[in-house]
Amino acid sequence: MVESLINWGNTILWSYVLIALLIGLGIYFTFRTKFVQVANPREMFRLLKESPTNSDGKKGVSSFGAFCISAASRIGTGNLAGVAIAITLGGPGAVFGCG
Image 1 (cartoon, rainbow, N blue to C red):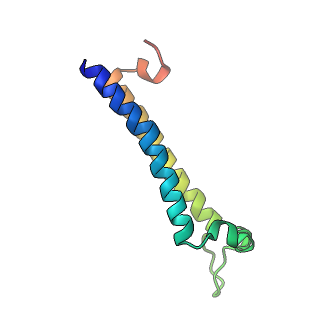
Image 2: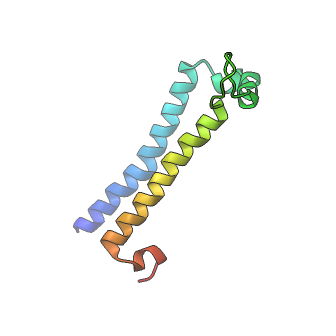
């Protein structure tokens, strides 16, 4: 009884509500930023090719490099924490999908 109720709520939240929320927020931010994702493709490619040197000659991090560092830190941390939690809760077999 309780399991079916939880499954029903899970289905509603993770399918209908989540999809509607993501689409709604995407449309909201598209209008709020004045269609920046389609209005400035030249600027996007210019920033991707931009040299990571500053005006005073020192080396820095390019926009693309900053994006890669940010993505790697989030993805890497999530993978490490996920494996640690799986081992803690399910034992070593949880990592290999046994059981």
